[in-house]
Length: 376
Image (cartoon, rainbow, N blue to C red; front, side, top):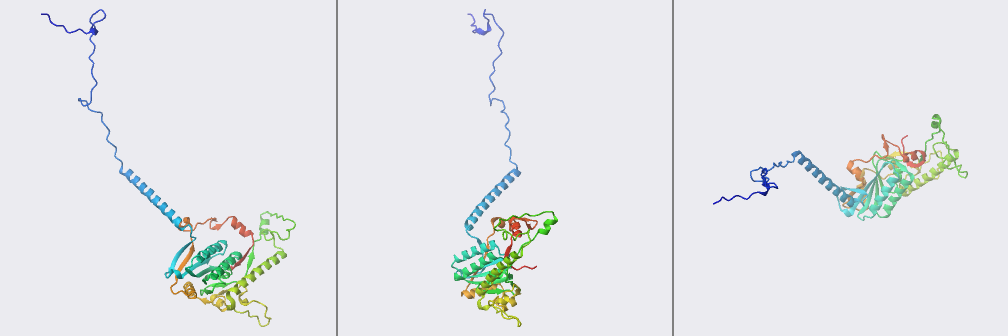
């Protein structure tokens, strides 16, 4: 029997059927899990504890900032319509409120505006039955002083009693704003009075000559005699000085009328020297001389009613208004948000402690008629 031959591979023979060289064996690619180890994988990186701490702190700061901003927005929203801070000095029945407000320092347009806002606030509140006006001022601008005095009259017309408590100084314009109160109480060391009017402006002509400078001022023909004659670059003419004195006398007469209106028959009459005829002067002209007085002298002249302190003025206001359990509230102008955060008033317009701005330049060049007491 013949042996079976395996089938021949056609590739093993050439075209003529001759046998060629053997082909290399074909190998399959290795498969995972068949004895070949997988490629190593890097372990996950652990976050540094310092990084985690920094991220946590930043998150807390952000959360705190967010809460603070929300609080400030709510605070501003609740108090945006309030111009004053209110602090309770003495607890009592709120329908028997005494409002205490302070006029201090220079009496200018801002002081007048704030006091007017205070008065409107008080007159909208039926619980306020009396006002104690604390005055610690040497005076200021004529118009601003007159505006505050007029507001005091409005308070009285509304049925509220007004008592003035004088501080260290309540002179000139400081007395002007006090004169119409129901009563005036001065401290033993108070300086008051100075019922008079002043005006002044600097003259720089000599200074300009020394530095080789000359100021040229032109005026229209019709106004040449009077226009801007009260400036710092020309000496005043006799006519100008006479005109200025006329204006001061008119303001003086108004000052005296306000004092007479407020103090009535309390003022001491004028005592003429024995060798002079008694002039025709209004009651109280003894004090209408521009002098300042201490509390005892002012009381003798009828300029003040009593000698005492702020608490005495509060008690007297309660008595005049018939309040058995007064609730005393101090009103103070509200500080700006910036001032609250910084804990101090912003010092705008200051250079080395000296104010130098357009307003200051205007003030030194423009004459100011003042109810002001100054130590020369």
